[in-house]
Image 1 (tube, rainbow, N blue to C red):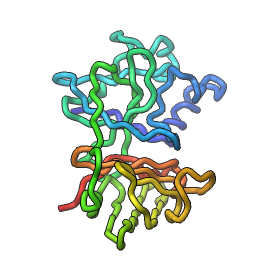
Image 2: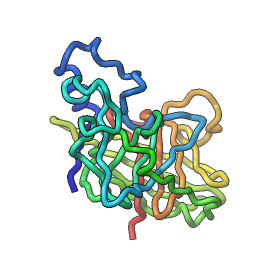
Image 3: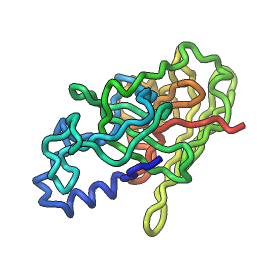
Length: 238
């Protein structure tokens, strides 16, 4: 399997070196920059159903800004990187027949996200667990770069997590620590969990769902240093 890993910092460096800053529009709806946080809608995970594999589709800024006709179902817009049947991605915006996705290999030792367009027909949403019991949340959950531990604390849950993102010279870190009451099918909290999630303000906003065997986490990128996110699919340690 081949993957085209491109972190946010590297992407920015490529964009800036490829041409004048004015040539790049981060808000261009043709560009796929991965998943986007929203406080009003839960994240969706999807499974690749294409057989035996599906290639990522380019955005206009790819190929030194020469992919202006992309995304499109053409050979010129098809990347070399691909996913195979059964891979699970986090899904973002939909543009016509394509969905913007973020993929993280569960076997990686550190966070290394691949972002790009995939055909809508190649994806099938994975339904979250409809009504998790308290025990369904418990455990130590692992993701490349960090862990989240969830324990029972009376009728609530105690959540502690740490994420480490190495850089060229050091590392950026993030932490979450909260005491929360889970909702019907979602855990959602701000900072330490003492304020309602719907309340405005708060630096670190986190939402969790149980999806298949995973704990799916999303945050607003406000829970740590630059480039640190807890978003991803976590597996429970045995």
